[in-house]
Every structure is written in structure tokens, then in C-alpha cells.
Length: 87
Image (cartoon, rainbow, N blue to C red):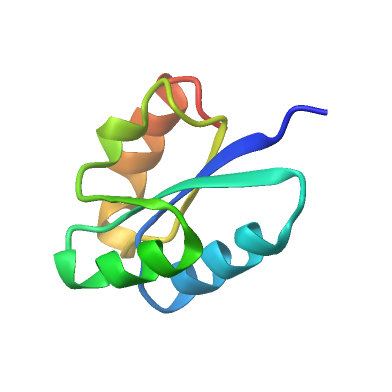
């Protein structure tokens, strides 16, 4: 079975938990963590994922993404992610 390529956008309180759980699921390949705060890059390294600051770099690279950003940014990011064919 092909693993689902996954990313988490927003590595705050909830995003960290999404990343931790995805990392534990055998059918999931946690490809990247995305956050505008570069100080969160260490979290990606500990999970074996790439760290990026622009979620648009995920387009064409992942099957699914969790969006755990502040409410004010949710709509724009979700629209762009869905339009890119990412669940």
C-alpha cells in the first residue's frame, strides 16, 4: 500500500500534535512541516520531515495537509491547498 504523503501547516500548539500523530501512523509519510516562524524548524528535524516557511511549496508534493494556523489565515490557506488538489 502506498503511504499518504502528509504535511502540517502551522506548528503551534495543535500543529505539533498533528505532526506527532502523523509521524506515528505507519501508513503516513510526514513529508514536511510548514510555519512562518523559522524557530520551529527543530521540530521538523526531530520528526524526519522537511521544514518550509511557504505552504505553496507543498503543491504537487503531498496528498493531504492539516491546516493548524491562526483562524485569520485559515480560509486563504485552505482554499489554496484545496485548489492545488490536496485533501
